[in-house]
View 1 (cartoon, helix red, strand yellow):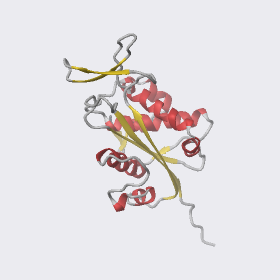
View 2 (cartoon, helix red, strand yellow; view 1 turned 120 degrees about the vertical axis):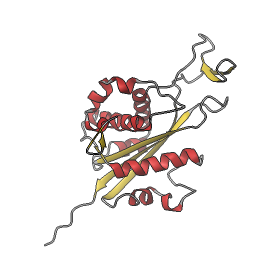
View 3 (cartoon, one colour; view 1 turned 90 degrees about the vertical axis):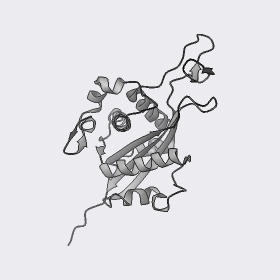
View 4 (cartoon, one colour; view 1 turned 45 degrees about the horizontal axis):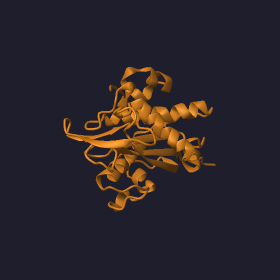
Length: 216
């Protein structure tokens, strides 16, 4: 994905344009995911929801994205799920994570989510494939093997889940927030567990700029 003035090109197009491009329709390679493409897809899916709600669209912010990325990666690496980082004191809270990057924001909020990356129905079966040396997630009735989401469909699915939660929805649709950074980190060693379906831990960081100080 190209850049313009250091901003990835995917952030510079409208959400409708992004979702009409073939790049977002690619199936996620869970062993080698394109982290930047997934971040862009999450950002665009969030703006799609804002547009449908008649709200101003978010502006991409590098500092919020870096803070979100740090937290998503820590949640996978150290296997925790929550807003507080129990490993690194300097990254413990949303405020500390963002303040390490910037002091431009006077108000901030964070959404996190943990969603499986295999597109299955609510009920499905699991078996080990000796041919592929990995677990498969399939339908008992039809023997259909379920595949990972595409980048666009996974991002839209995640945003749909956030919108179903009153607290997360309130952050996502709050008109006071003007800037956004998104990130996702996927579970390591996908398809190697019967009990744990491959998943991602996702982060949205929202920001409202500080009010300018006017001298009288």
